[in-house]
Length: 161
Ligand code: 4NP
Image (cartoon, rainbow, N blue to C red; front, side, top):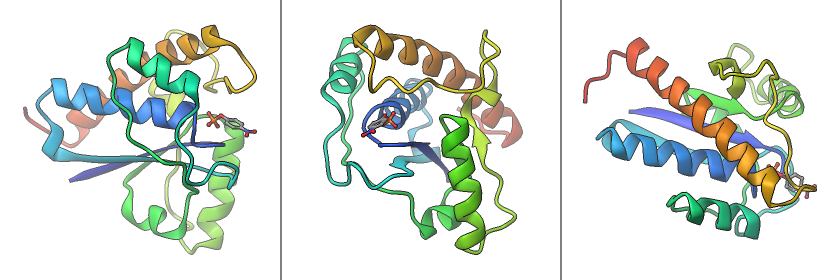
């Protein structure tokens, strides 16, 4: 079982959407039982909350289902998840500090956009203060980069459908 954790700041916009995109891809690929996924935030701003309305409507328009309540990254995440994927450099920096604090100094944390898409930016931009088009923009970025991530994982773990 390969465990994948998507991390952003509030855990109500980017990371729940990323997880929903990932879940649909593994479902379509017939690989549901080879993965476990979740999402979390570096902040405690939205613990227990449903995803942002705009996240939900973006997900709905792409036929993605989201079942999530906001939560904050914790110590056991560093133990349990093989792939911890940060949305931006701020999230990455916080995770790099937390892994030391929590006693997992060797844990590798990835910036999700290192799994290559057509742009050179390394961050999935925070859509919180944007409009609906900001959510469509992050959907497109995430869809492309998560496709690449999944393909790389399939190759490196020699997974077969
Ligand atoms: P997210 O977006 O990190 O993609 O979930 C944000 C959600 C909430 C806030 C910032 C970003 N906030 O400041 O409350």
